[in-house]
Image 1 (cartoon, protein in one colour):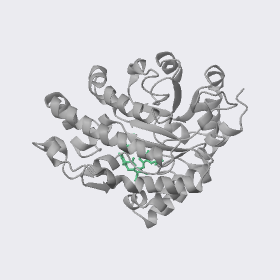
Image 2: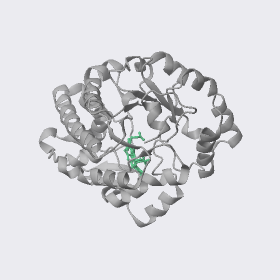
Image 3: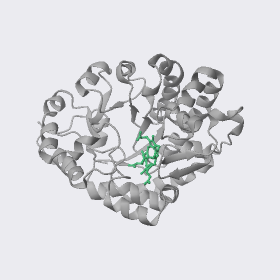
Image 4: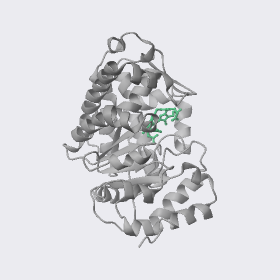
Length: 339
Ligand code: CP3
């Protein structure tokens, strides 16, 4: 596969940075909005043909350099027996674990419940020549949702208290999530994904010492399992801040930087052998095209100095983003002389 995305990920210098966007498949595309009129979100992710179709929409409509599987990080708690409602205010679990006396006993882990994901990958691989990114959530982020039950309070107060008060059970839950995630990631690889992204959307929630003690070892178990199968790994620890200093080649091949962090400062903090992805502010895409072009232009010197860079946003693309600006952003990156 001749792909600028894979070449960059594997450390080869290219004439421009590759581009894709977190949440490119859902949220922003008119073709996705049209499909959502006929199907619930749950139908879209659990019906392999539909999930594959949505996965490829941004490649067809926007011309991005990689596809990301259309699914969700919460497939893991679903396969652990937790019942989920996809409400208009986000996902909600009916029995948040922090409220339970014996959270582990509530779980009924069935790895085969994730088979629809592998079937979706089969369909994408059959239909497309573009690299496919598989993904899962990292254990802290998954555990936040499982303990709290809802995402509306993104401070996850019950989950945090649980980490402090019930350390042994926290560790047991981390282990259970990590083991299922390793099986999930390795099966995604066996079905043909080309790269893997681990979403740690809430790494900024806990002090870095606690993160390093409890969660980073679990992240490394997952990233080792993925990389041992020859697949490059991108880690997205949103909100990690100065903790980026702990991101070494032992952890991942690329690290995705959030929009709050300066890319240049991130480059100084992260180990030089780890590539960077990111990190434009999703709100930049609401600004004028002149402004978007000026901002992109200002990154040319960065690319010339640090070609191990994949362009992305610093978090998911936002639902109301003007679609013409999303096109402009991608086209500008692909048509500009970066050298
Ligand atoms: O391009 C894509 O959309 C790829 C597929 C994808 C989804 N979720 C689809 C989705 C991916 C990679 C995710 C990851 C995900 N899911 C994360 C990590 C990334 C991040 O943004 O921090 C998290 C925290 C979740 C959990 C989740 N799923 C939330 C909080 C919500 C509700 C709010 C929202 O829209 O993000 C979801 C629902 C969800 N996941 C939607 C989509 C397209 C919206 C459902 C709809 O169409 O109504």
